[in-house]
Length: 96
Image 1: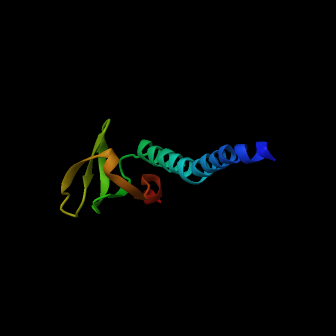
Image 2 (image 1 turned 120 degrees about the horizontal axis):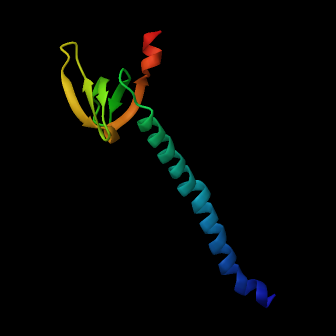
Image 3 (image 1 turned 135 degrees about the horizontal axis):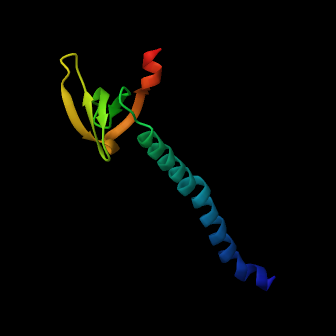
């Protein structure tokens, strides 16, 4: 019985670390991977929404930046790719 009571704190620590990994770290890494895949799949013609709430269509893309058109007047804004929050309409979907 003495051995079990001295091992209990170690067992609890292992259980807590496993809990943190499966419920916090793993989902965050999955979300990060999905975000990076979305950024790598961006292409001209995609309609996007930025983290700041700007909605526009991608005109051109470079390494870390892109240019989007935001209005019918064809106002162009240069943004970092990392500022994209979501892709509203993919370019191939818009052509259909």
